[in-house]
Length: 189
Image (tube, rainbow, N blue to C red):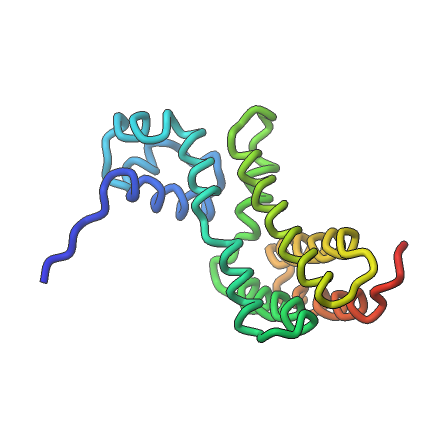
């Protein structure tokens, strides 16, 4: 049985996915090329340069699908589905090598507003927002849009705090807050 080595495009995406997460989006092109074992020409042929590669890494990453999967594994109850996200974040933030949210990190690090990665970050965050709006609608929340924003703030805070103080278990604290949001669905500040 022979295994086929992925092509240059796939190797570039995989290398950039790993290196931009562990070292940040400003990791050098040479490090990506070396890890992918491809010529510089391949980077430009497939992505037009590093900016296009970073945008593709964000576009193709399965994070949003993983949120849906975690919710689906929790069953059909919208409350349980939302809280399952925070249970999963507890696992994620406790893993060795956790470096926070790749989308937020890229958005903050890339100061050029025209960088194509910003559109991918926005698409991801919008998709996550819509996922929670849907669950909150099913839960009977009177303001699912606002509730979804609150959940995203809890998630972003969990992922940021998980970098600097994982021993504080920020996902568990955020889960408690999410429970209050679900229990007090009619309250807005």
